[in-house]
Image (cartoon, rainbow, N blue to C red; front, side, top):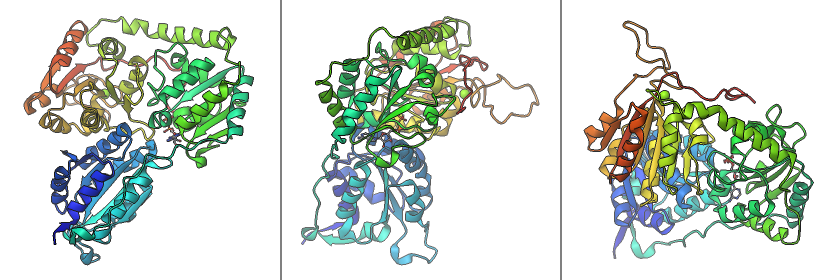
Length: 551
Ligand code: ADP
Ligand code: MG
């Protein structure tokens, strides 16, 4: 009778559960697992650091709707992948980390790379388990996949020891498990659905906040119908961007602070009142704000501000319920209100405040001038990755999204260094779509070596580095003998030379009048490109009414 190894069984179980991509680094004891994954039809991407591989796995999970895998060697390899688990947990995105482990029979003996991997992974995960017997691999994979996408999505960990990877089992005796169905689309209490609409009807200054929970639940069609039907002003969260198009006339993104501060009713759709939303508290929110909260996770309801109405359920299913309930109502939010005029005036003033920087053609460029050409050039269906301090913050307002799940950034955890892993995930799991990553020079540096991965797999990613020679701001060239300040990086560093050395195409663009031409050339080039744009080191943002991280 034929036998299968643990490695083969793992690969086949993953594939059967809809895990189509695996990002990782091979070595003891997982070499065979990657090879078997390829044989099973899983696309394997060998990366240069487990950290970037773990970022790629959860971005691919978010984009595809199934958890995708990260594969690491034992001990340090597993630990290098924890940033991806933590980031996935904070963002509520699925992924499955498969950590190689020293043989179980050597536990406690000081084995090569022996580590308490399950215990260490557990705080970052929804589910973490050791695979204790080769024949139970299909069982554990089913458990892990289901737990990562049912309810609030999140990361899971499976510990895969050397002796289990190499163990053999009679093929005919293997018990398999069916593919985990798509997550159930749970509905909210119908009384709450009517209650939510009653509260919205009673609002003078309503605001809808569309978060990435709606993007995850693929609710864009329903959310668009809801907003159109109710004519409610809305705000996209940083990665909720595109569920509603950023350029929709009902978007009040350009008047964000005013909208949040003065709204009397806020309807949170798959978004949390965490630091990004200033906790829903004064002075950034009205102290009497009334909250309607839609979330799949009942435990999230009431965080920081009690919810007047709780819509616990799947984003798409609940928005459908709202749309159906609206068929029995005449109401929509009127066209002419003081609230709309206030928001429009504020948005116009905010746009006006940066116009001077957008029009400033001096060299080196400022952020807004660079973004002017980038935004005009970006294809509508581009998946945009934005990362860095000012690079990301200004990019959120200056690069617009038309489609859901087309924006990836530092997210809920504020993680810097995710960009190249995310770009690789997008290019691999969304083939044929333009992938554009805009990073600050500091953000780029965290995983810069992954450009070798990008070139090796011929991923046609367009990387843009907005290079001001610093973490946040820069100061320009250092004087002779000057001690290097902590936040300063090499000014004018030629990062484009790195991609050239590895076989890609690079550009260094100093003069804004050359930028558009280079962007067009880059898009026409059928391969990876890095465009390095030195910025004026002192270029900044529009003056903000509230400092960064003010509550
Ligand atoms: P954002 O950063 O865009 O505001 P958050 O990550 O803070 O978004 O919040 C997303 C919320 O969406 C989380 O509280 C999560 O529980 C919720 N969520 C996840 N999946 C679904 C779903 N299918 N339906 C509704 N809500 C969901
Ligand atoms: Mg910088």
